[in-house]
Image (cartoon, rainbow, N blue to C red):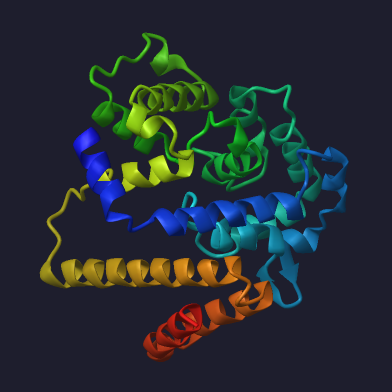
Length: 286
């Protein structure tokens, strides 16, 4: 692992990106000081989740899904989940009280009643990102939200990965706590990785130990392969675009409203994406 780590650090490719992301995370916490003042959860409004007029994601989830994109990507399709959270707003606030409660363990936070809100159950990726963002300073949680990814990383970076015999019967929260603890234990076992930030280490894992995609049982034809390649390229372009926007936002070169408008421009006018990227890159370099 250390050979790969040295290559990652030497390249310096993502250091400033992750530093900017952590600054944005701190701004998020200042905007929503729920840990320091749990009663401020009551200031959150349904429109902060999802706005109905016009229909668009509210500011709270804009932070989680877009501004904090470099710290644990969420794959969310459409607006169903946001509409559902808005319709069960009081239930969602109760979950937030659990998330910020320092007396509750990570296991309790993950195993809370997320599944009472449709689309928040399953592996609870959205819930885990919310938990990470409000507990990142504990340095006990990685911004990795898929259980299968944590298992894959643990299998690949630990010299002799050992799962407790109880693992198969553990709750989702217990598995999440176990895997985070074991991976962070590996991180702390080397002087070179001990002091780096948790998000930076998580990015290293994804860059140098990319989890395999689930293989299809059918052999894809050439057109399918081409479609997948184009889709991958578009995802990479969008990822780089969001990184650029987040960097501009962190340097106060654009406002939060401008960030949203640029993102909509990217989505609505694909033919102008290259010139938009060049324009914003020039702004960054001023």
